[in-house]
Structure formats: C-alpha cells, structure tokens
Length: 59
Figure 1 (cartoon, rainbow, N blue to C red):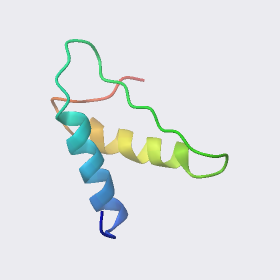
Figure 2 (tube, rainbow, N blue to C red):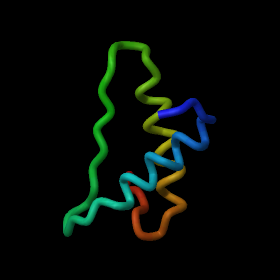
Figure 3 (cartoon, rainbow, N blue to C red):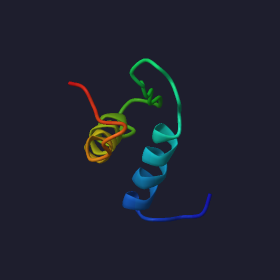
Figure 4 (cartoon, rainbow, N blue to C red):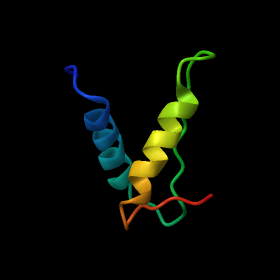
C-alpha cells in the first residue's frame, strides 16, 4: 500500500466496510498497542461511515 492522505485511508477503509455483505449490523475492530491512535481512527472512520447511507453507524 502506497502512502496517501488520512482521508484516502479513511475512504479505503469505508469502502472495505461497505463491501461486506451481512444481514446483521457490521462491526469493525481496531487493534494496536496503547496510545497508537485507535480511538482517533475509530472516531474518524465512524464519521465517514455515518455519511454512507448503506452503512451508517449506531451509537
């Protein structure tokens, strides 16, 4: 994977989440060491996914 902007990364992640076909709500797990930015990434990804009608976010 080449280097890109944070927005490009979030877009790719949103596309990956959107491409998963399941009948139940989708869940995304983010793993990593302490203070690696997991919560920041999760918050930013949730904001992007909230703008995608077929994905959306809950809570």
